[in-house]
Amino acid sequence: MAIRKLLLPLTGTAAGEAALATALMSARIWNAHVTALHVRVDSRDVAPLAGEGLSGAMIEEMMSATEKESTDRAHAVRAMFERFVSAHGVEVTEARRGAETATASFSTITGREEDLVAQLARLSDITVVPHPEAGEDVSSSDALHAVLFDSGRPVLIAPHHPPGAIGARICVAWNGTAESAAAVLAVLPWMQRATAVRILTSGDYHRRGPQGGDLADYLSLHGITADIADFRPLDRDVGAGLLAATKEFGADMLAMGAYSHSRLRQLILGGVTRHVLENAAIPVMMCR
Image (cartoon, rainbow, N blue to C red; front, side, top):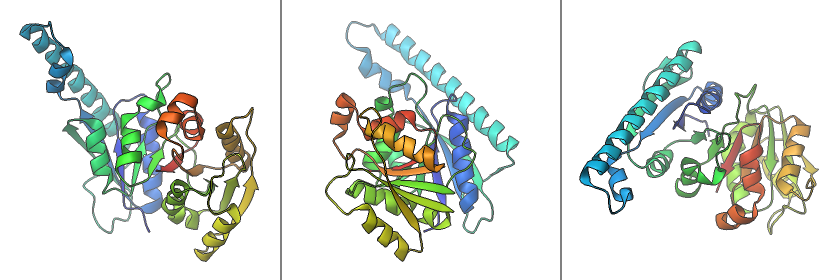
């Protein structure tokens, strides 16, 4: 299946340009459309959070400050988008059928970001999410987790810095789960265009399900030749071992299932998904 529409939620500018670069690079491969979306905070949502003991005037002041901050952020994100598309010669237009080049558009809506992004992602081929900013706990990335858990579509996490390439050398983290199978399906059209594909497996990572060799046989039916490599944890960390194996392969994309264990367990104890989200230096395609 060809990629035709990418959704890019932008909440700030710190990681926004790397995410824009990742989305545009992907769109150019497929002559696809990038819908950059900024969700503004609704100042009326502040009132229920204000709590008791505050006067009406104080609540109004908080709502006014929230509205100003939201407006300033929206203007900054829009300005970043316009600078980026202008510098890269991207046509700003609505999505259209049969486009022969990558296009982009920008829209701003007001509401709860996690709800709106998940809903819009359901009719997008991929949602590109900026990498969590430095110092930000990845568990608080509402848009990322909303897409993973409530859209039924894949999410592509952009790296901290704009990638030099994407989708030429692909690693698939395979552990036999339904989540990793969904990631294989999402990255299948990319693998059909790739110059090299490697399946990464590990006894410390595998769950009950088909083995790496079974996946290689399945991919061959789609015209994809993939080799298989076993990796080992680094300092008992499976996620670190996985990322080391992708680096050794020279991968410019990693596809994997997300949260094969419960999200709560991963937040408390850590896990492969969490480590990759926090530390990957290349675009990562994830499915849940």
